[in-house]
Length: 88
Image (cartoon, rainbow, N blue to C red; front, top):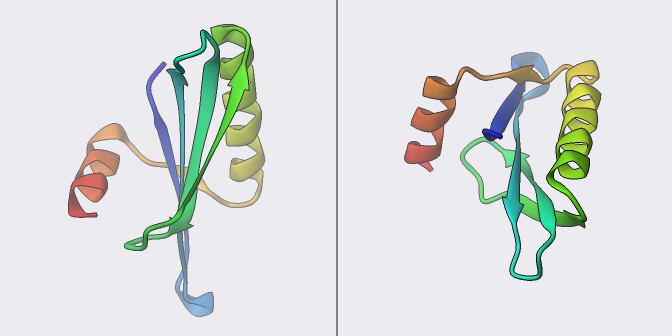
């Protein structure tokens, strides 16, 4: 599973937000859905939620991605997301 980066921009409201989702194994045999969010160019916050299987973690990632898309976030193409991460 590749990481997903979403962005929401609204210049009239001075809103420039990002949201990253990824799945990674932890040291205890669980699979974690890692969520990172904040203002573009800022430090942001991170939250990791463990799941017993990779499929459960993937399902959680997809649910969160769809929820963010309903709120106006757009999925960035991988090459754009990579450039933005390198700039941070």
